[in-house]
Length: 432
Ligand code: SF4
Image 1 (cartoon, rainbow, N blue to C red):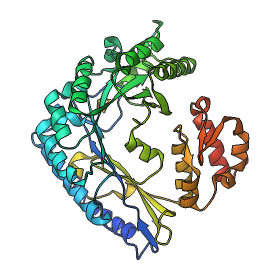
Image 2 (image 1 turned 90 degrees about the horizontal axis):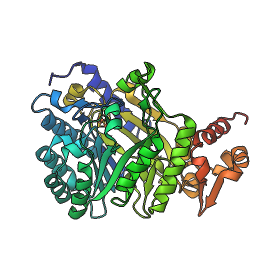
Image 3 (image 1 turned 120 degrees about the vertical axis):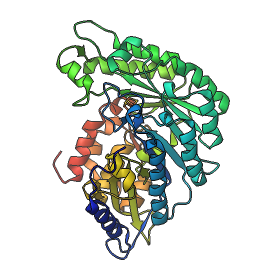
Image 4 (image 1 turned 180 degrees about the vertical axis):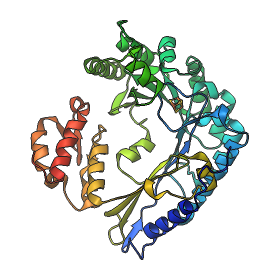
């Protein structure tokens, strides 16, 4: 590992001044108190190999110098200590270790990480760790359970060897079937990630629907939670180049819709409910950590490239949100490890209540439960029905009003963006 690639002294100084100005109640935030985040995200930006479609922040583990993982854990602890002292955090309701591929750290390094964070755990915690089958074994699963992890999120994406080659995805996914069994016998809940909209050879007709339905069938009776994300082709990735030069092709929108409908039906026959645009669970097995994001709660993210959103509420009305602060940790690993508490001012954003109100609608409407009307009123001092009356009238055939919540019906979940464009236009005072 090189020393910080940009030993820029103003990085640290500016970040601390910036933090001080945001976190000092007597200055910018007079009359506010920070809501203590109940959720923690820990980013581990290392993977065995770079998949051909990935634009996440991650580095190949084999290219990191000896000692990097331990130094990274030290930086995470230092950064977390800083936020604990700033915000008075005592315990979390949920912890999520994602990446990257946290399991590439190996059992000994992970054990150090978990031992430190377990003091912020409670008996009620949902504590998830992401893993890929090639870097987990039963001994690691037992170690995770012993340190308080409750849930494993396995990245499989597809079982098809041909599709995996197209995605340049390493590992043997069938190992995952044994791992799921081992995880259950350790007492861990298991979620599986699959991809929809897989590529095919250009000019070679393909049934991407049957591949994904077969992937679902391989795991549906073995787990309680499945995430089925649409593959997106990100600019600059190897997959994007293969699609541009015509080597690979992607299914069209009609095929994707047909696939999503078929997946919904198949999963519902196996006892799963689609509770968010890309997520399915058996009743009561929904991911609580992600539910916090969709309810627009505050959360702390630590690690290189991790995002945090903190909410500042009125000291008189603890639920009334007056400010939000969003910041992202630097992706420069060496810089992060040298100054883990720092925040670069270019990666810090002040969120006004109007922005937070729109985000609450946007995130809540991704879910089947929808947005809490009373929570919205408490947070922003307004009723949703007064904020977007024309949008609600226009979409009335697609809305579900239930138990003080507003949600889109199943068919409209897939056209959420159209609904949100109307919401934003009306909230900003535009004409519908
Ligand atoms: S395992 Fe995940 S994070 Fe890592 S390179 Fe592949 S897609 Fe990206």
